[in-house]
Image 1 (tube, helix red, strand yellow):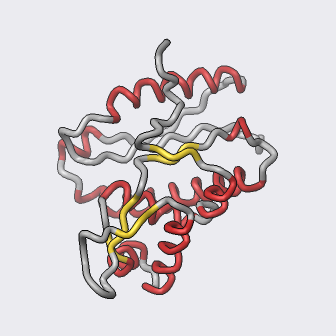
Image 2 (cartoon, helix red, strand yellow):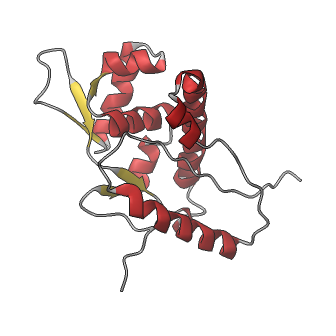
Length: 187
């Protein structure tokens, strides 16, 4: 039987529980965690510079992520006050269908949307600087579809299957792929 493309790899990914959902229900923590996953180990000072944060605030959020088991100190780097942090997992998995009434689930989803929008604002600043081949390969678009929840689940599964085929390749530069799908309820 083929592996479920929406299921986490237990060796490389984390399935979020109520406690980790609470830790990640803050957009800045998601931003910091995603940065460590995308770019590798960093210090609070480096991360504070990237996100225009006070170093004390960056350190606080990093300690919360560490207490939640999402990051760890990289003891092979730095010394003394120069603490380096690294992500413990490749990805976080949360199935909102399994906890639709859980407030932590919705807070995490809301923080995720805010973190993604922060990332897009940062990316907007580098679009003029992208090399032509990367600009030509990039996509900045959205689509309005007319679907039922069952059809959206089917589409989600197909997209994740496709993404999974490219996920473990290690012969190129890091690429961020964001995918959002939600009903337009304010009609």
